[in-house]
Structure formats: structure tokens, C-alpha cells
Image (tube, rainbow, N blue to C red):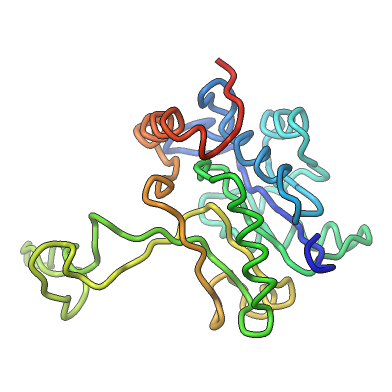
Length: 245
């Protein structure tokens, strides 16, 4: 809790990944991928409850073993490839509300984004609550350094390379472009009422929580996992979590 605001953390982890089967419990420096996120959520002084939403018995078992709550099994209708995070988070909110547990803010923590610095979650929560009069949600962003929108291309119907965006900026070298940002799953955070109203963490009054360059990776395939493992070895002091070798 922070400033008397109750905060729920929902960690979403379905079992049917196609890009990297079983990725949420794949070993990463000696511990399952999802555990990196569970540990960070449990470290938080601002989060009141940590819940994992999953359709997988194996993921549920790992989550419980490492201290997270798994009070329900995610229904099949919310377990497909095309189900958005909003619906999954709302399901968790409503399940807990029926049990008499109501929260002022809800945080979505994606287990595929394990590169969180110590204190990232609390700093983000405090930033949004401290700005509650002018902001309703917060999303973690990393600056795009290579694939800037101004240089991204697509193939036209005639088979030619054309700009992906209309009237792209022109600059000499990527440093000359205006900053562009990509959302990463370090944290998505919103007032519960505002999340219902806009049905998204991206709202008219969304503020950024900026992450560093080395945090701008998510696990979608085996190559991502390999890169993130290397970064974790190099940045473990910043993350400040024990590694099981």
C-alpha cells in the first residue's frame, strides 16, 4: 500500500505459447522465467496482493511454490492466442471483488519481461499515485534505438520497398530522429475505475515510466531468452536477486 491506496498485481502467464513452448517456466539462470517477476512483485512495498492468472497447472504449481497466489484457474475463453491482457486482468479484478477484495490500482506484470531493476515497480506505482490528479495510468517505455519508425519499411502491393509510415522524418543517422518509444512489460499500471472506463492501460492521461536500454527485451522466442540470460549475468547487481547456479 502507498498513500492508503490498495494495489493489486496481476501476473499473466498462459501455458500455450507457440513461439517458445513452456516459456513461462523455462529455466533462466537457474529459476523459472515467471519466478523473476513473482520475486520482484513480492519485493514491492506498494503492492498489497500478487496474483498469477494462468490456465496451466504446471505454471500454477511453480507460482505457488514461489509465494504467489493462484486463487483461480483462468477459463478457456481467456486462454487463446488472441485474448488481450485487459480481459485477463479484469477477470482477476472481478474474481477478487466477488470475494470482497477491492483495489484502487491494478498493475499488470508480464513474466516475459524479467529485466526489472530493484525498485522499478515501487517507483512506478509511486509516480502514478503521486500524480493521481493529472494521470490515470502508467506504462513502462524504452527508447527505440535501432528500429525507429522513420526507417522501417514495408513491401507494397507492387512488390517495392516503401516507408511503413506516411511522410517519415528525414535525418542523417539514427541519432537525428526525434525520440520514439516502445512499451515493455516491466509494468502497466492504472486506476481500477479508469481501466474499466477505457478498457485499456493506454488512456488519454497515461504517463511514462522510462526503463534503460538493457531492459528493452521481452521473451518471445529462444533467441530472446539467450540474450536476456546474458544481460542478467551482466546486470545482476542492478536487479539484485540471488541466482541459483
